[in-house]
Amino acid sequence: MNLDKFIINGGNSLKGTVTIGGSKNAALALMPATLLASGKYQFSNMPELKDISTMSRLLEMMGVDIEKKGDEVRLNTFRVNKFEAPYEQVKKMRASIYVLGPLVARYGYAKVSLPGGCAWGPRPVNLHIEGIKKLGAKIEINQGYIIAEAKRLKGARISFDVSSVGATGNVLMAAVLAKGMTVIENAAIEPEITALAEFLVKMGAHIDGIGTTHISVEGVDALQPANETMIPDRIEAGTFLVAAALTGGQIRLEKCNPSHLTSLITKLEETGSKLQMGDNWIKIKSPKIPKAVDVTTAVYPGFPTDMQAQWLSLMSVAKGASVVTDAIYFDRFKHVPELIRLGANVELNRNTAFVKGVKQLKGAKVMSTDLRASASLVLAGLVADGKTEVLRVYHLDRGYERLEKKLKSLGAKICRVAGKEY
Image 1 (spheres, rainbow, N blue to C red):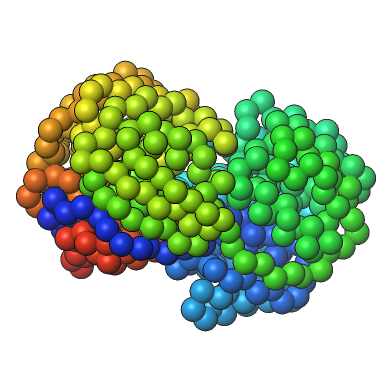
Image 2 (image 1 turned 180 degrees about the vertical axis):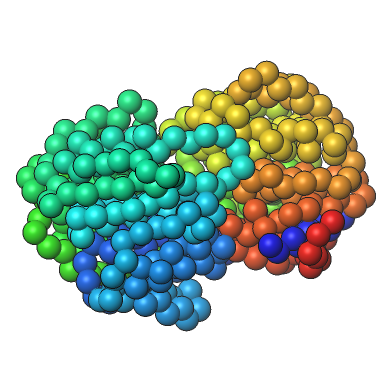
């Protein structure tokens, strides 16, 4: 395992322009969708990330030919002949379960390991399983594997108890080849699901209600390959905006979509930052000391759970006290003990962090535990006095493309140091 670390010397305000990459979570949904029709696909604006490599390896094990050139990825699904997602691959990334719907819809059979992924919290797959079952698949769990079989899936009404991006995506991919009408109620409306639905329509799917919580799918007999450009990564964009706010910086984000970030932008304005935006750019100018602002995470378009850790870092140096509640994942606070090591004043009570802003964080050695926690520690290191070492940044490489190089281009003192173990 790659055990690189970052060394950060804090104190510099971020200034300059940064280009946002393609969306990790959109790419991880669109790549398995290629299993729905044999042929050649071309995806552009693809981010170069560990999770994308993991999904590529998984699809290659099934017989997909994948060729990468710059930010373009070409996939050829003519030779798909294996319908299994083994534990060795799935344990690395929860999004691997996205192959379940396409495989059973197209080939009538799927054997998918129960997922692993981030180190925090159980994120049950029962919504995926129940959704595919309602479409007529026979499903059993055997030795840690989901085994699904169906001659042909049949349309059904599926109402999710809780809004789930993954389950919405999986059921959507299965429903496009099911016989008859499928109605998905309480569907997730995240931009990544909208991107997936629009791609499926390009492939010939009949979908109504895209971008709403009520999606109708009229199944078709066959789909055909299509090409797509990935939407911008809204969490990468949000992370840079918070980095600017933390350091009292002034930066411009290019190739982003401000409409995907409305809740975060509103909260940043409440901290005292001034933001300007166009169709695909955002400028932020931040005060030296941000004001404390409470947030509670919510499903899209609410405040993203994937920005909670970064927001906590910002609040740790804000003027006043704030309350940060994660209403999506109750146990997503592994970064709190590490922020406390840097001098943050945070008290945790179940899924709520009570933060009192301090004048100065102090550099220390801290350990990454998951993707967004890693980002929060890097951001905190940007304002900490002295040297901060963020260990195990392989978590970060799953979802941020060359983060240290982008931060460095904005004036941060940060470098990557290769290492095997500490």
